Length: 303
Length: 263
Image (cartoon, rainbow over all chains, first blue to last red; front, side, top):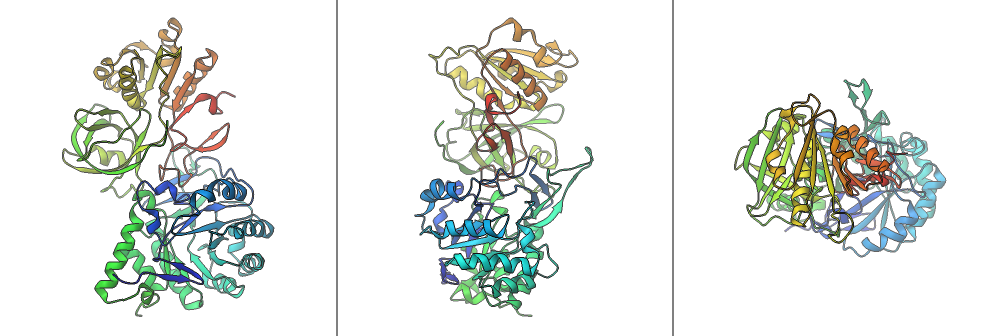
């Protein structure tokens, strides 16, 4: 048994395996299949200050080794989260991290402030990389100045651990990572989904109602891994790696490339128990290769 | 219905019956006793050995044979995922999430709703078999109205006949009345107090319209492309009167009054 504990700034995770926002609901959806308290953390569904109905159907297209989604941040708003969801999950023995999104700097700030008042939410993940909403979202995450602007504003009102989720739909992700680090972000998580599209040849129409959507699943893993590696060399803050992780080997690859923790996303749909298998697999790997603590793995890729 | 615990089970194929025209019936069993499952609920089947298939496939529960501890799934071969499932041989293993979604409403025996019509079209007849057997066990005499393009597409008729009277329509007139289910004489000749429908969307809409105009309560079982099947991803929404609702958890069965079909 290796020591699996890792730290993301002031946030301590009992192990580096967490679940990605938008793929794990509020955690309770999976409680029939796994003991969700074994997870290092749960990044819950993207939350905005106002309720959002999300995009029209169809919102999903399957791809080889992955899927496109265009959900569009459907959620009942921050007040509903505080009143109706938070009470059910606040006492879980794992880190509940709220993914915060917005359509303007002010709405990001308002949502972050509301979540900051919740005692049992130790961190937020600022989503500046959702490709599926027209205003805000990815618009902030594709320029260093935009990313810096929203992080600067949120940092002023949010005292706990601030993780910023980065978009891969940029020329150089390290520029964005450096910009948010410069504004006081405690950590970056990457990658969000890659912008893609699918066409129905019989109808000669796009499959998704929004034409384009976000690609996720094992097909994006090599890109995500490359970006984690590049970002690891560019910033000092801890990195949470995600993108197509579907087994413990994938997770170890991300750790070696520079991630301190990882998120399991789309593969939860295929195997709702996969996150726990990954915890066990990382533990065995550490034992087999003589690592006493999992944090020793981070960035030890030999090049 | 109250909360029903969901399971992930490794099940074993006991029988794979191939029907004509791209259909097959998979019978699956498990080492453990199958949990309670209600008519209208569905399962998510993991498909390995298909390079084109990434996500699980949502398949409605066709029948539960308690004596044999068997779950039946009626499969229509549509794409590579369902074609791969249809190749399963006895003793092959399949991984399933079950039971998922909301069931059809079972009226109480003391309510005024005694004459129940179960309408199925194409592979949409699948959940009607389990619903019929469930209603029969609950003391009702369900009536089935099953529609298909031609006689070869009418499946499991002998099974249906165990649980109630069966009427059919075919578009070419090769079995039952010629035409669509909505044209069948039983709809005007008899007075039903509850209608359940599953089939192609235009058919369900036509039956829903008839039910609404006749002031008969009606439930439909919707299909949708799904990813998680457990309400986590919010991909499979239907635009309802209460906003976007996940078909996998708020459905697949909806009362037509909840939908925006009739407005």
